[in-house]
Image: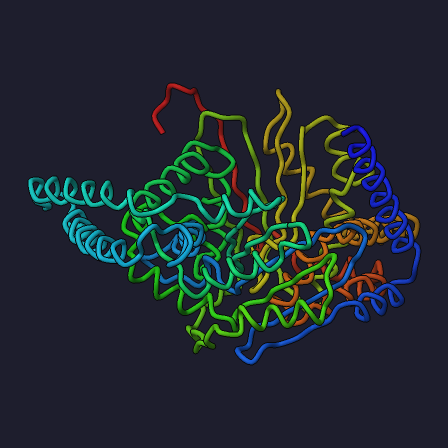
Length: 512
């Protein structure tokens, strides 16, 4: 037993040393050489049904990281059904016609009845004050009885159990404005199990516990938005910053939509967007690329290509004046400032990564040195380029938390001063090179793990249309000049182009 533990410890040290060595090499090689080496290692394939596959062999440990990304998010929902993309993510863990069921033939009949009664109940509840209370209560009782009967026919969370029993690490899923992601890391000899599970839930998902899970996401919203000052402020900020584009809608959805999420619309949404020709798979780790591709063709090749939605997305008109909002909440004051900006592959989008780094990356950043350290006005000042998504033009956002005895107005004024400094005074060569080196190092460091690399490869493949956006990134960053920074700052970081949101503290016993 002790020898076994020592062997494990030895292998972990060896793997760590290999990763650190590889990272140190990546940090000193020229960007062009690094990009060339990565492109040589990544093998890209497209199956007959349109599913794109990225494979990269890394034999540093007997593990593999697997990412599935669908190009669908909250931005693709129709008005009145906000929250569907996120809710569908929950549904995809409920199992399939073969996973999670004890008797699917019997279960299918009960599910059909559950959905029939559930839709009747929803139609009655939609009448609001005019609803028939007696009928609503009868339908609710009938639905609960059906759900109780249904519970005897399925195994809850069997997908999660299968992964856990087979050594899964980092099993997770997420829904954003642009993309829905399913990820996991596994022992390399369990990759076929993953393919079996994931292909099955792309082909035959069963929406078990639909109405119970709808209540779960409603509670999730209450906890992460309604009762959370940060979540509430961000939601209100986005709704004001984006008045036409769907980026202004929350990922979780608006409450009046979430309460009536419909199984038919959810199924149609799944069929429309979780199609193989709208999907990217990235696998990085201890694999044989040829054998892995053959296995993917076996399991995912049966999926049918779908006609993808070509629905028009409303563009956000140019902003022509400052927008401001104030939120009262029993919490510490907060500040958000956002400026509209383009997204990738615009050159200006790259420049904003440099601006973000200059202003807020580390203790030597301008915001930290001035607003936090020297003047003591804030506990936190951070920037984020690319909110809330990257498929469409987005925001360069700045977040600030004033220190006790200081105000949002003080922090806001100092932020504007630092922005004016960037506009009017060229950054010194020393600060500029330090910032670019730090940004490049952080970027490469994020690729040191199998999971980090699989994440980045799949992200850029699904959103930019080609993972090589990743390999070109450092080359483009390396060509940016101090003059580019001044030009972009003057163009976008203006009063007319900004939205400002403030959380104003109020007594805890005040009514919301």
